[in-house]
Amino acid sequence: MKNLSLILLLILNQNILSQNKMKITLNNGEIKTGVYEIKNTWMSFPSKTRIVSKKGNEKYKIDKIKNVIIYTENDSIFMKVISTRKYLNSKIKKELAQVRFIGENIKLYYVSETITSGGAIGLFITSSGYFEKYVMKKNDDIAYNMGYIYGAGQRGIKKRVRDYFKDCPKLVEKINNNEIPKKETFKIALYYENHCK
Image (cartoon, rainbow, N blue to C red):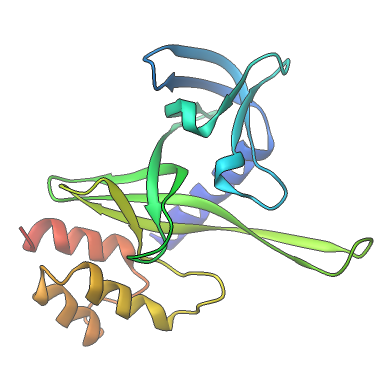
């Protein structure tokens, strides 16, 4: 599973940096197809995400997009614009997220993030990519971060699991007892789907 996630991360980052054939469904129902690329600002503010056509004559802001299918050489990646929160009471953001699992009780999304570090103006700036993992219960409109949060470390994951999954004490107990590893968001989502209704 880790190898699959790494491959998907590499594919997604490749797609963000290069142009690919895409099918874009806008909020008004209009569908656009062609060669596009996903562009973020260098600070990766989600609200600044754009999808731009090869010639640059078409630009779609994230708040106008419903979903996107990216066609790669051997596969396709389905992405959807979702509302997210990093913490239960944090600000709501719109994000372009890769759909990883859709069940009857829970959905799992991966959002590509970039960590930028470096010095003052003129000094080298480095960046690296990773996925933040978001879950959304069937009656929710907002996906909640259940993965690593840059700067907060792994300690916060158990607290977020307890807060978000308080309707399923069996799952919280399994996380607390390390029967399901706190970093295994896919396993957490599958357990919720199959045992918490």
